[in-house]
Length: 273
Image 1 (cartoon, one colour):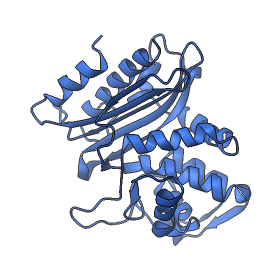
Image 2 (tube, helix red, strand yellow; image 1 turned 120 degrees about the horizontal axis):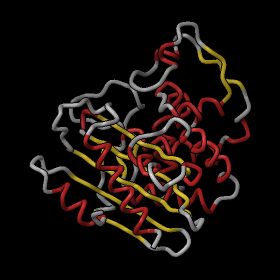
Image 3 (tube, rainbow, N blue to C red; image 1 turned 135 degrees about the vertical axis):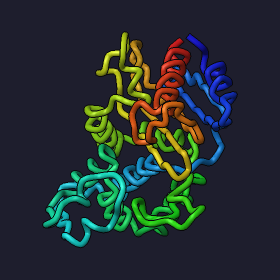
Image 4 (cartoon, one colour; image 1 turned 90 degrees about the vertical axis):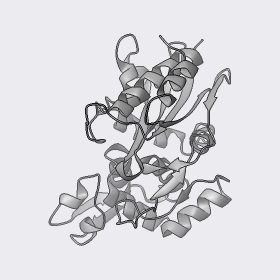
């Protein structure tokens, strides 16, 4: 099997000249794998991992409270999710909305959560002042964008900072892990491809992926527990990977998704040495 650096070289040498950014970290021995980790990419749905943390820090007291979602609010956002398809509205807890945001990447749920956090301005203030990172939300996920605009921007380095915060914060760690535990149950693509073969699913903590066709972005981040019980952070961002078969970017067999799985497996093995 090719090493992580060799895999990246092979991918970046493809005719379309895609971009790859990776960061891996072993929380036990601090072993680190990095490549262009500070490069900024269109965030796609990976930015929702930041929203979840902010909500658990600032609003966890209302997690069990009911939030009625009106018929009109179900039409707030397009793209991923199921709430936009409900014609009569629904009543959910904030915990349910967080789950929908993280597991199904539901953009209506995300819109409501971002509003509760003070909107785009409130989220960006938290990212800057509390997390001291360069990640920024440019627009509500699922809203219409002008040409050349981003929903948000982030880096694997910023996501590593976030997950370190989660792992070091007993107030939110278990709640955050519960979100990822729900997410992993239906996940079988990208980093989750490493569940095949000798990597049993109970060792897999969960992931938050993202796809944005407009920017040719395919990303995934994950928390994995290896055979020694060590917690590993693995993040792979790609941009511009073409699919020779012409598969849609939403297709789980798109070339970018498979490459993310291959890189993730190589990183897992190297971080576990």
